[in-house]
Image (cartoon, rainbow, N blue to C red):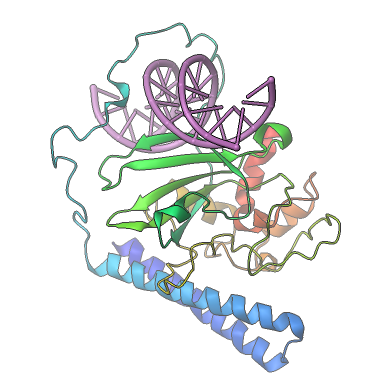
Length: 292
DNA sequence: CTTATTTGACCGAG
DNA sequence: CTCGGTCAAATAAG
């Protein structure tokens, strides 16, 4: 509750910063690129504004149970592990493999679609391979889809994402990203980031912002949810601390990398062509280093 | 035949 | 013990 308020405060601060940035850009009368930056800033501003609203509402209105408790109609739990320990034939191979990432920074985005058809593509510029689905307790739409980067084996890209319906809104999808894309894939670029790369150019370490892969669902709906929303779980939980511990305390994911000292670490990364998303979770990169 | 999706099971954290 | 995340086999689709 109080953390939510703190979050709102932080967001307000970010909003203020964005405003200043916006003002600065207005003064300078940016060149051609300024237009794009201004659009980005505008988008950021609205996003932050929305986030503030969300945070505030969460703060003031204690969400006891937005959706009906899992005890709605019978056994809430999924029958996933009912036939437990039946075939031990397979358990042998998994010796010494960490099946779970514990300290993977993640950030979530909300994607609104117009129809279920959009659910299929839900493209953010990367190719994902679905690897699982789970029933989440307490969620109105318990189905949660898990995706991994298609180039996981080929390029060792460990980025992953989860897609889940927002409670109440079948058209609103909550996409949670884990990790960064280390793969180089030239899929269709995003709307706001027309990559003019003539022949597969490497990106610059500091792309000055260009990660709006989530702009998929923004059709005529108008009600495009905040492209960026913070982990809506426990604020002070692990995820939040991950971000804050690794980077500047209040650095929002979309803050310019020049603002955080973490940038230095990324610069001396053995992989020069890290993806643009790297700025979002530099801490994650440090974490990834153990895999190199 | 190759590749992607589905589904069940295993594992670890809480 | 329960729940969520991931793996891998099985299945479906191109």
